[in-house]
Length: 291
Figure 1 (cartoon, helix red, strand yellow):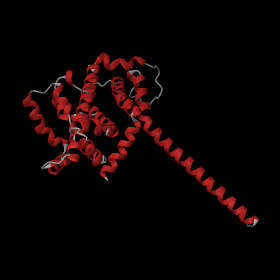
Figure 2 (figure 1 turned 45 degrees about the vertical axis):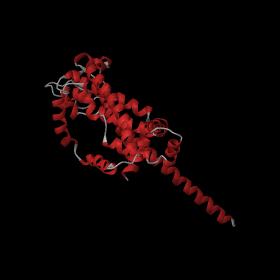
Figure 3 (figure 1 turned 90 degrees about the vertical axis):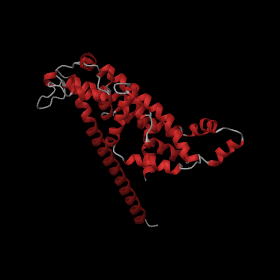
């Protein structure tokens, strides 16, 4: 190869390397701008909490408070029943997750691996409920809860959310990946269906169960409409209902409201960072199932 050809190849390689470096820089800058845009509301919320009440709505915006009032983070607990709201949300959220982790895998295993008349029809009925708006379901559901005497009780907040059609669908589709030969071998060894389910199926469903737990907890933690309907007393209000009530006053204390909103987001952030890899896997799994 001639000297000119070698120099041309080197020039082309250098040009491609420079182009690749410029591409990485562009992506880094773009992601940085996106991260800054997402972090801006949190920075404003923290700044508002630390400001005196008179500076909360000042124009132009002062990002740094004239005085840092760290005690404002205690205002929700001091001026409202915030501790009770937090306890209610945690109790209801954990209870609903536990119930879904019991009912959804059982139903998914039944629809996938057991054979009985009407199995596929029942599964279609479950899937059909996904097309019904929640607002339509809440009308007869509230009537049932009222007749059972579960209004203003934890039962009314927990039991109706004890299972989900999406959770059953997710568990059924995941259970399909378990080979039938593995279960048949266990049956030939004399294992009962319960033993097969507990010893073989559930351990293989652990990643999907973690994904289901994350989705159910985050969805229940942010639920507003159903707790607002079924809980008329503030002793049974969850955090979204309590936060909504704080905004209905004639004079809104924005420092208190921002502090309550930030503290309400802490559990979901902790769950996300602790189970981030499961959350990302769940997004991919849900997208694959819907596709």
